[in-house]
Amino acid sequence: MALSDTKAGSHYLTGLRNAHAVEMEALEIMSRQVERLTHYPEMEARLRQHIDETKGQQERLAALLERHGTDSSTFKDAVQVVMGNIAAIGHSMAGDEILKNSFANYAFESFEIAAYQSLIAMARHVGDQSAIGALEQNLREEIAMQEWLAQQIEPTTLKFLSLEEQGVDAKN
Image: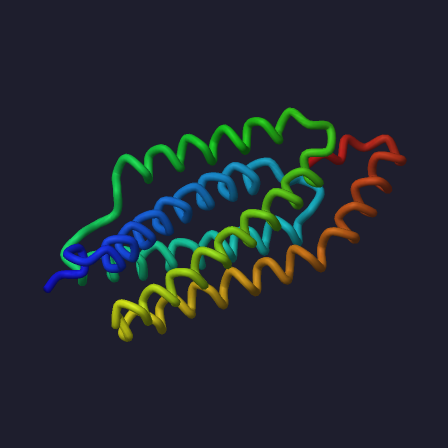
């Protein structure tokens, strides 16, 4: 019996597709942010690293979907790309863009962490033991990024304030 033949399996496959789409949105958001960062090289470097990690996460999710005879939702992926671009554009107009991006990135990581925790529980429930390692790797990468972002809120805020006090447009 295919996973899609059970309610739990269907929810699990939908969750995998949703996670793939969310990673598409994350790539768009981070790609737009690194293009604009001028005063925060450590943020740029870590975002570039996480872009690479996110591409790996997408590949792992795509492989899981393929193994179950399905693929990502082109529609969901496209919607998430548009949403990522809208979010990036919205923050780019703010005078404190770096702060808004920092807060949004932290919150986004929280969402992804919860999604992977849920997917791991679903994989266990439907007996997809071979998926757990890939999902746990994605979860570890998201937790590491969120922890790094949490450590950067205060120094980023203080650097932003210091640059602004010096008359530098420090928004990005």
